Image (cartoon, rainbow, N blue to C red; front, side, top):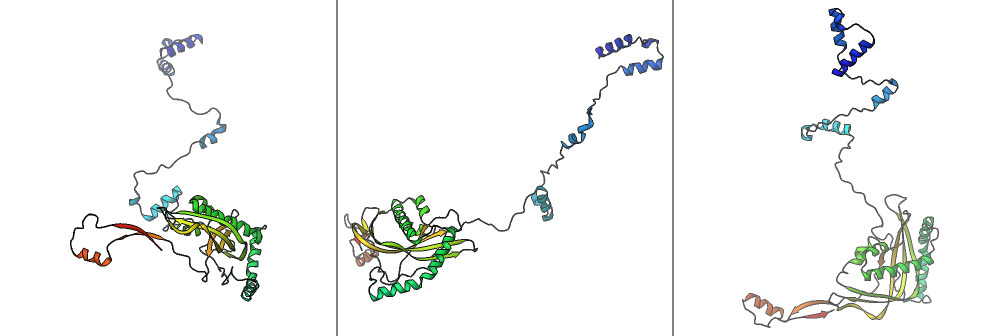
Length: 335
């Protein structure tokens, strides 16, 4: 303040103005007021050119009421709050997205002729079967034509060879119990059937040779939900020689043999999701005809007591303490 007064006095002296003592009383007060410091700031910009843009830099925000509880609001007020904040109302049901990568079964399954693989084509029954197969071949040709609309390189003889490779790889993967790789080779329907009752078992399987070349005997196409969502199923006939041996967790042989080879006639269904650009052929199911003889049951090990069932019932009625070594058990194998 003292510096400001000194500067004012210097300015008055420089301008050769009379001092305040020589002025009238009314002018003396005016001179003292003018010498006081101005206490307000001038914040207005000197250039009003960007005034509108500077005004738009500030956005007014409605601060929500944090003390407001949802229980105290009515349904209409709740809808208004949700619309203001851009929140969608909750749905009364729950929806989960799902992807249909395979069908739930075999549509129009192939019915193998009785005695297939045993009858010669020269015999009367074999020639009759050939004629019936030619009559049923029309629908399969129509399905193959539809498959070619999505896969131009599809040829039944070449596909039969590819199907045999998939068949062998699926069985080898099953023996290794590689679950992640098996899901890429078989469909979601076939996976639980293959993995059923495989735990705690050792499988030895080997594909020796083909007695007859694999061939496509059946083909069908169908749509699921929409007409564009098309699945194709092709049934391939395999007549081969294989070995199979299954061991339980104790190393006992349950089924088959690793040295004795057997002839196997199988009808395997392969499926592909044609509508999917990245769809692949996978093993879907095996068709077991009614005329095929049943397989030999597995050898199951279980535990039995030395006492006969009648004696065991008598001991239960009487409170008798058995002597040491009286209850002996052994493990036997029964068919």
